[in-house]
Length: 220
Image (cartoon, rainbow, N blue to C red; front, side):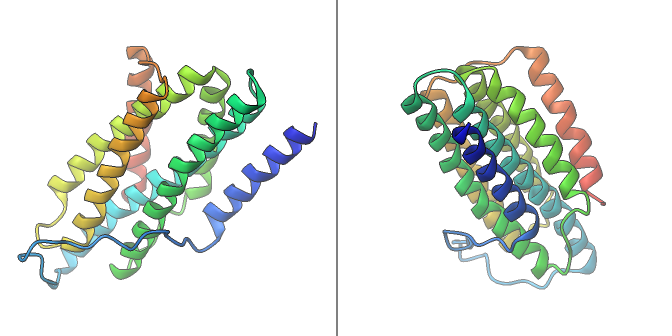
């Protein structure tokens, strides 16, 4: 009972911090390293486009927090020895901590662009939390496989944003590039830890769900 209560309190605290507390990154905000990446004034249209894309990325990080938190909760309450359960939970939480950096960077960039996060963040968090809890309850291999597929899809999604961002928006581009590098590593780590390759229908459902989220978050 104490394990359930402790794990639930940790999950509740993470939810409240994600949705309502200021986000602080553990790493400096990425900056462009090329000589061409000098500060450039963006037009209003470019600002609006960059803000819409960074809002989508911010929603993705809200969902990532929910997914990693719920999967860690499921790991602590799942089968196996206490040490195995805790090892998996800590693996998920470590990846989630880097996602917190992404969350802070996206929010900072939204502020700089004079925009705001999605108004539906509590809804996105709740939906992602439920999905992560289900994935986590299906066992270690499935839970880690879900991480792999999620991060691979996010990688592709970030690639598309690099194509869409205004060429002169070096600040947003630097953030997206670092996020992409982190997501690739998270997927590789999950695969090395024993994650399975999810069935094609599950991957398709995940892509469809992500499409709905990104389409709505682009504006709301």
